Length: 258
Image 1 (tube, rainbow, N blue to C red):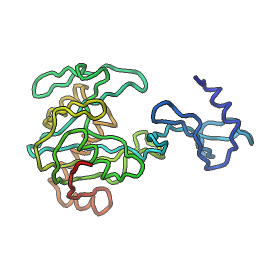
Image 2 (image 1 turned 135 degrees about the vertical axis):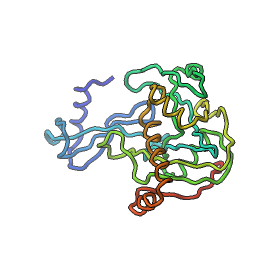
Image 3 (image 1 turned 90 degrees about the vertical axis):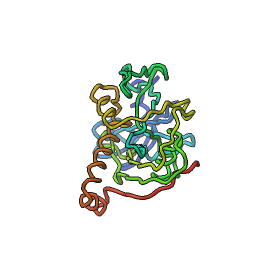
């Protein structure tokens, strides 16, 4: 394990050049620590050519070692208006907090039966290198919910959201997909097995208030965008305006098995 001073000592082997970016350490699973040499850096350290400012950030990587562009998240809406959510396993990155069980159709569901790190979320995943945002969105939707092949109407937030505000990579792309078929799985084998639920918007909101849905990046951002889309549907002029300024993309899509 490297401590802070040992990590800084490693910087002495690199020549600082304004704008230069290089990996310092790579973790055992899908991330590496990148160093950005910049006059805007808030930290300073000794490099091979003197003391200079810099900052570090985490870069997610695919199995190939290529950086992952970001994440794609979807709120799938069934013809009856219910929303599809899945139970993901999210081991803690910081401090682990045990999940609060949600209420679904009036019944409290024990998330612990699905795994120790269960989190109720909307479907989503990484945008792998070489994939477009749309193809990543539709692939995650198909794989994580077990929906059948069908046509759908997709509302996508064109500018990504950067969860930490100052990120330079790794944006989160949000979509709401209005499905034409009600068929979906109750369980899929993706990512070691995911439980699938269909819930009314009222149930989602209640579980957010109760703290049973609390993942900002994988649930709360999508819920806010879903509510924004619902508002757009009642105001066509505003929807047209958001399309014109490049905030919103609406298209008919085909969901197929990849």
